[in-house]
Image 1 (cartoon, rainbow, N blue to C red):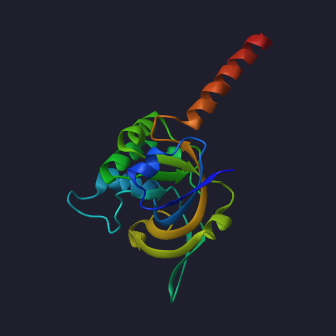
Image 2: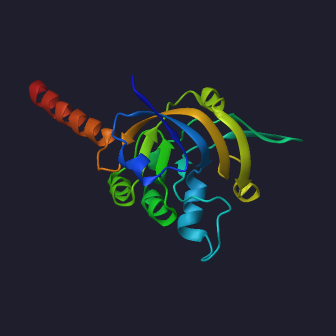
Image 3: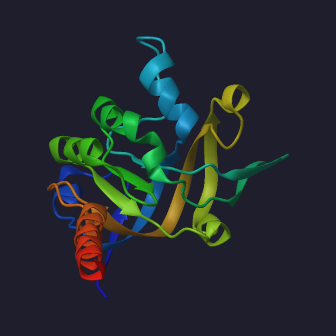
Amino acid sequence: MNIRKLTTPLSDDDVGTLRVGDFVMLNGMIVTGRDRIHKFLFNEKPPGSSIPFGLEGAVLYHCGPIIRRDDTGYTLVAGGPTTSQRVEMYEWWVIKEYGLRGIIGKGGMGEKTLQAMKEAGCVYFHTMSGAAVYLADRVKRVVDGWKIDDFGEPEAMWLIEVEDFPAIVTMDAHGNSLHKDVTERSSSVYKELLKTGS
């Protein structure tokens, strides 16, 4: 199996050469963001105000991590993917507004996000569910957090450094979506089964 090793921030060339089905290992800084952060960025962030983390070329992980705080700082204890469809209504705008090059999550996203990925040059990385502790072991360190007091730790945005974080490209910047293909094929088979059973 051919595995691509990529380091963030991702470039146009990185994204442009990725195709649905490519296995990757991500290295470098990524940010987390779930429902509350997306809603804030889309609806509530005051005009002209800034985010403390640079998102141009960044990879955003749909994750509500379990964080432990001690005298030395923060440790990510568990960090599996959140179902990405929950933020479909916001993601197309976040991709375009902030220059994201990658999204990590599970389950894929819809047509509006797929179109935004094609227009802006962004890919969707599907990572494994049910492996929150294993994925947390791929986190070298928690660098910082934003909106912790406002939203709580799972819904805050965290800047984390990852090493060999595993994922597969299931939506690429060329308009291809494995999730869409599976849905269409499944629907076709289902319709044939209904005909056969009637």
